[in-house]
Length: 118
Image 1 (cartoon, helix red, strand yellow):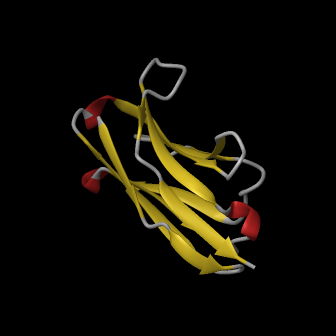
Image 2: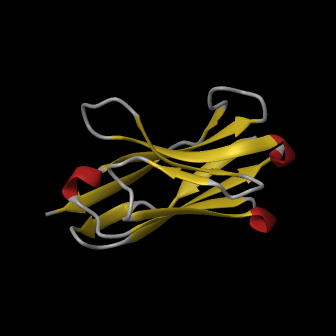
């Protein structure tokens, strides 16, 4: 599976952005897709995930109520709608895929930078 993330950019605090992640290759083997983020000088952290077939979602407390993860199976794409953005959301956002039966994420996209100005 290859992952291609896009949609990052510069936005003012309170604004919105939508990130996209297109999966290609062995997409039939994907069980879960997720978004992680890494702020400058910090470790990468989990933001949200969605199961590929059932659409079950999970969010980090820091983004719950502001971010929404969704998927379009026909387009092999996962989205992250980010609303009410804060300067602390500034980070490189990575999409990741996990295969069925795996405990860790196996495939990672290249990352897309989100910068939120105050």
